Image (cartoon, rainbow, N blue to C red; front, top):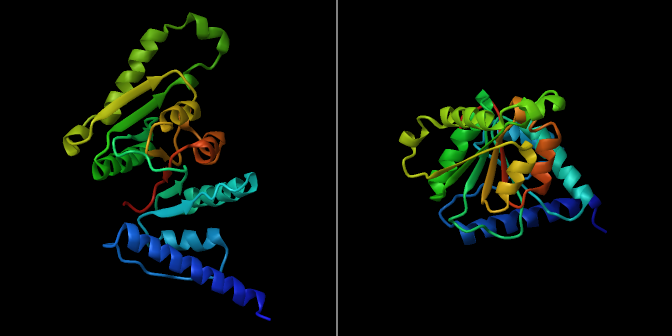
Length: 238
């Protein structure tokens, strides 16, 4: 009878071979290096991220437990990894005309997310949707009826325009759609994700996107997005 550890290793080797076959089928020009590592997924992937441009996790979508495990690995990598982390979700491939969506809050990390999103949009020949929400401006709900929401909307549109300034010159091929809305960030991003091929968020923002990775917003996007999600954090540049 085969030792359980031997069976596990054989199964892992088959998975690696199948993965290499998928790459050969869909991207024959891409070289593949197989590596079978024994260890805890988080520790191994964090170590691998130090020499990577991107770490990609697949969503098996088998159960809520599977989602929780996926989330724990994704969150750990987003906090401690040295490169962006992609979580591939969704049952089908979005059309090439579908946009890349990026969440912005004006923080330095969201600038990194914007840079990543612009590059991806350019490489994919896709449009870019830049999302900025401002619901967190209301500290006291009792003051809400007294505020000039139209003026706030105009001010927040200026904020987003400032964030996008200069990028059009660097990526003239990327068409940009701006979304400025009084809404929660998770709800706004998930609404745009419904028709997107990729969602990009920063890992440590402020304001509406504060706690994007560690809090409920990140979990909502990672677990409910119908398309792949990339979490960008400070660290090695792509």
